[in-house]
Length: 231
Image (cartoon, rainbow, N blue to C red; front, side, top):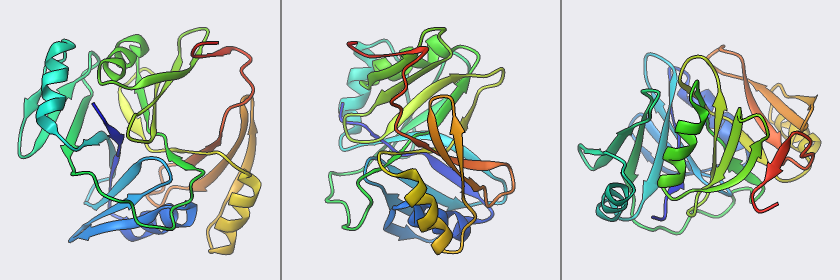
C-alpha cells in the first residue's frame, strides 16, 4: 500500500492556518470551496474551514480497493463511505484513507519539511500495530514504549504517543536549520520561538485557533532513551 500521510485540520481560522503551513514550506496543491490541500516536502496537509477546530488522522492512496484488500489480509476492519475508507483503532480513534490518483506535486515545497501528526493514545502499542498493518515503517521508538514514529511509503511521518485520551495533534518535522526556519517565519510576520527539548530543538508557532502551539521538531539525532529501527 502506497499511503501518503495527510492529516486534516478543521478550523474556523482556515486562512491563518494556510498562511502558517505555507510559511513553513508547504505549497497549495488544490482549492475547493472551504478546503485547501497543501503539499509538503514529505506528506500533505488539508485545511478545512469549519465552526469547530480539530485534527483528523488521514492518509491518501492511489487505489482504495488495493488498500481495502491489504487491510483485510492484515486483519484491519474497514468501512467504505463516499470514496473513503475508515477504520477504528483499539482506543476508538477513527482513521481514514482517501483515494487520490498519483499526481506530480507542485514545485516550491520545502524538501526539509514533513508532516508529523501525533496519534495520542492510552494504547500506544495498539495504535502502532494499526500503523504497522497499514504498511508504514517504524523509524524511532522509545525504550519505555510511550513513543513510536513511522515513515509512510508515499511520504510523511506519523507517531503514536502516550496520553490518557485519544486525539490527534498536527505537528511537523524539519530536516534542516530550525533557527533559520524560525527566522523565516518571523520574516513573514509570524511569531516563532525555538525551544531546546531533550531530543533536539523545536520551533513553536502559536496555533491560530488559540489552543497552544504548533510544534515543528528538528529531526531527532539524540537517541538517548530511544532506538532507531534496525539499530
